Length: 116
Image 1: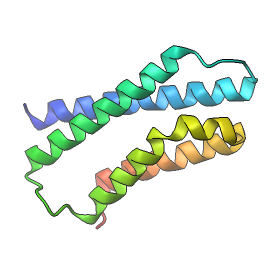
Image 2: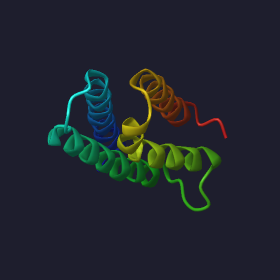
Image 3: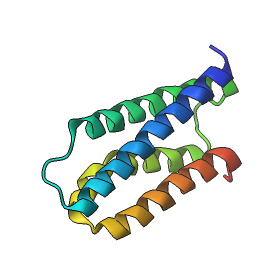
Image 4: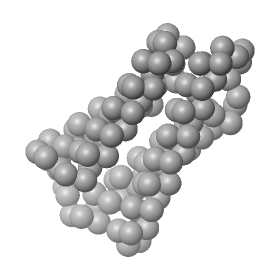
């Protein structure tokens, strides 16, 4: 499949992930009870799309082992964002917003700029 397909898939996963994180933080901020299941579904599907498309783009770009340093940063950010729903239960919603914004922007910057 072409690189543009993987890029669109990656961005679609990012949109789902961002929507789910925003929904989880809003749910926490409102102090509601159980979280809606759809937020967990969006989170999981978004992460799956990001992972599959990310490795598809790596293959299309011809990046093989050993990976460059930016790839390790992206994997760590992926794991942190994967565990973010557990963090929303423990951290204040105001801090959670800033953490989510910083993590997502850092992941986007690292993927676009490939600094190392």
